[in-house]
Image 1: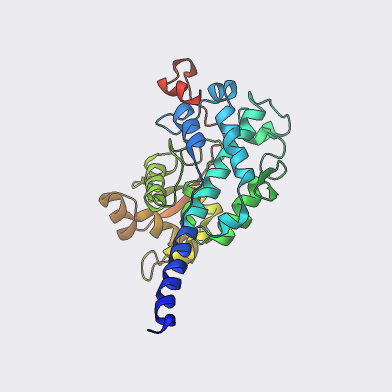
Image 2 (image 1 turned 30 degrees about the horizontal axis):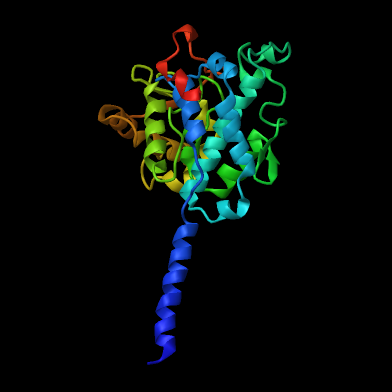
Length: 289
């Protein structure tokens, strides 16, 4: 018997086993999950006062992000990588707020933003750095140069939460590669259900849309550009409307398809996404112990 006929299948099985193992994301989100369950309510708002008093699990999760081996990360599936970066971004935002909570008013910034806004914190997005694996990154760097540049997934704008009411809600669970598609679609639906993010005024023939779609509209063109629909608009707004329409109920979707209207981009609400009535904290508080 030719030894090569025996060895080749064995080698192939070993290679397939190693390859399969490399696709597995073994990174744990237990601590971050406990944080979200403890401080995030059903509306996606955070109880920063509770988290400020017990930041242990959040800090442990940030330590795990810092200690992650880049070689291990590079072998993950794309969905796992996207989920990781979204979780990291949202956790870092929580950390920025906690380190400055309660937020102090910045005289200059108060001319443009609410007094209880993350925008009152100097350098919140473009100067404060966090360690991720071997790199030190700002929130802007994670969003623009990693998530938006390296991955062609426009729905990330429905997942990144900048600690403000104008953003999509925080989830009470971490993002995961296995559930990413469902989670991003769920985020889009929840976001569009709120009247301050999307609404239709039939009498005025106007459709009101969150400014998030204006800021990141170009990200939607490749994936959501329709062939025939919304021809009265430029390609970016065609893609935005096509994306939005896919998450609306039938009457709203039909209106967008059948009627002429103009688009109005809504003012963005930078007020802190802080949970009210913090004295009635949910019974999840023991999860942080």
